[in-house]
Amino acid sequence: MAKQVLSNVTILEGEELELVQGYLVVRDGSIEKISEGSPSGRAIDLKGGFILPPFVNAHTHVADSVAKELYLGRTQPRVVGPGGEKFRALGARSRSELLASIRATLQDMFRTGTLAHCDFREGGAKGVELLREASHKAVKSIIMGRPFALEELNIVLKKSDGIGLPSLDAFDEGGLRSIADQTKRAKKFLSVHVAELTSARDEVERALELRPSFIVHATHANEEDFVSVQKNGVSVVFCPRANSLLGVGVPPIHLALATNVRFCLGTDNAMVCQPNMFEELSFAWACLRRADPAAGGEEARKLLKAATIEPLKLFNLPWGPIEEGGSATFMVLTRGNNLMNLTNVHAGLVNRARADNIRAIYARGKIL
Image (tube, rainbow, N blue to C red; front, side, top):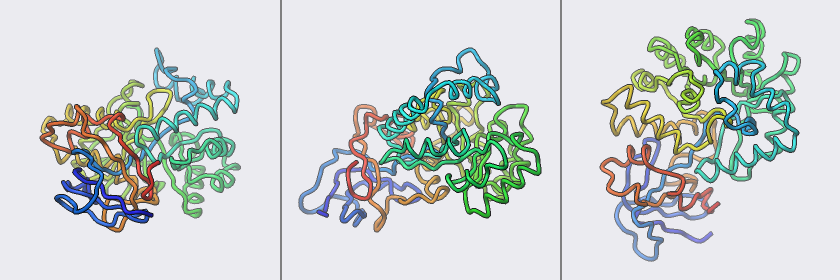
C-alpha cells in the first residue's frame, strides 16, 4: 500500500488525546509516524483540521428506531418498562421492517463517525440473530443478548457477545446469580441498567455483587456509589440525552470525574434520539458544566476520551489510540467555520464539532 502523508493538522495522539500540531504518515494500514511541524515531500494538506479516534457508542437499542418519538406524552416506565409501548411497537413490526430500520440506524451511526456500538438487543436469541443479519460492514456491533428465561441463557450466550439485563428485577436473585456465573464462565460481557429512576437509587451496590463488566445509566447514583464502582474496577455508561428526554434526570458525570470512575457515553434508545455521538458529547458537556461551572479543558478531554478511548479497552476493539505503530483507524475533521479560533481544542471539539466536519474516516489505512 502506498504511503500517505496527512499534514497541517492537529492530531489527538495516544490514550490521553495529547495535541500534536504537525503531520501523520500512514503505510500498510498502520501509523508509521506522528510528528510536529511540516513533512518533507508531498503531503495532503488538511488545512488546519483534526485527526482523532472514531467514536464508539457504548449503549444503544437500535431496533426501537421503528417507532421514533413514541415517548411523547409518556413516562419512562410506560415507554420502555416491562410491557411498555416500545415492546408493543417491536412486536407489531415485521422482521423486514425491523431489519430496514436497524440498517438505516447503523448507516446513520457510520455517517456521524461511529465505528462500533454496544447494543442491548431485546428478543432473546432471535433478537441477537436479527442484529447480526442487519450488520453494517463498517460498524462493529457488540451484541448484548437478553434471554426470555433462564432456559434460553446458553443459546443466547452462544450467539451474542454477552448479556444485557434490562434491570435487576428481570430475574430473582438466584436467576441473576446464575446468569452472572454462566456469563463469566463463557468469558462474555455482563451488564445491567441501574439507578435510572429515583426509585432505584439502591441498585448500584446490588449490581456490583454480580461483578458486571460495566453498568448503564447510574442516573441517580451518589458519590458513595461511585466510590464503590471505582473500587470494583467497573465502568459506567452514561446516556444523558435519553435520560433527559425520557424525563428521568441527568447523570452525575461530575461525580464520576471526582471519584476517578472510568466511563463511556451511549445514545440509548434510537426511538428517543439519533445515535449521533457529536450531539451526545455536546449535551454531556452542557450537563457537566451545569453541575460543575468550574469544568474546563481537562474535563472536556475526559469526555472526549469517554466517546473514543475508554470503550476501546472495555470492549477489546481491534484498533487503538492514534499512535505510531498502531492501526491507522481514525476520523479526519475539517476545521470549518464552527471549529475556527478555538482557545481550547478538546472543549471546542466536544462542544462544537458536527458530523458535517467529517472529511474522511479511515480504517486500517483505507478510507471508508
